[in-house]
Length: 220
Image 1 (cartoon, rainbow, N blue to C red):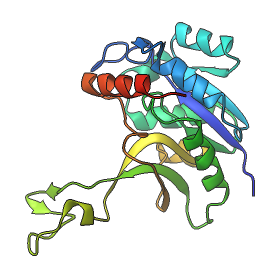
Image 2 (image 1 turned 90 degrees about the vertical axis):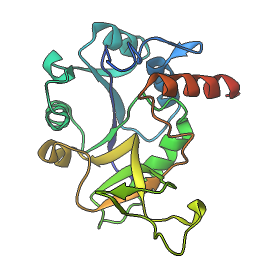
Image 3 (image 1 turned 180 degrees about the vertical axis):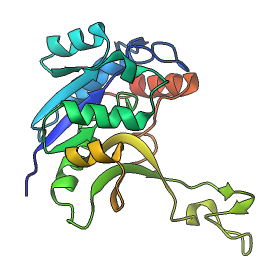
Image 4 (image 1 turned 120 degrees about the vertical axis):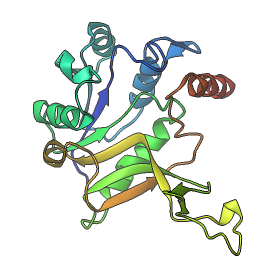
């Protein structure tokens, strides 16, 4: 069954840990424009909306033929909990399902999104959302205790199982649920697995540098 899915790309005009990371030069483009170019090659979205408080961001979206949502600037500050941002944006756009797509995963190409749409369309009704995740193959502790391995007999890292992390390449849920939850995470998520490189998130300067290096080395 094909579901109506609206692609939602939230983009702030500024950032703290990596200054202007969405708009600054990244190879021969920017994280923001690269993601728009990648998403423009994806079929299956009813429409794609760029949500931002930045006139520059919205202007670029319009030039490239995308729909836009002018966000109240207060929802682009660190003073507002992210849950309120989810609820606000979901309340101000139309569509049955929202695919929340960050621009900070530059190595996730069109095929990642095409497969996500196909996966969501075929997802069993027992799941209330789809979250893109990456498997964690590290030895993890919580409050001093191992949570994904036993200390004896010692396990090889490749044998560690059961722990995943959200990578925010794409998360999809019903718009009304996002509005009420203040999140894209429900009670019974379906995990859409992506490899660590394609799903790499730019959070710090070293992430930016690494992804830029990989992007330059790839032939698209």
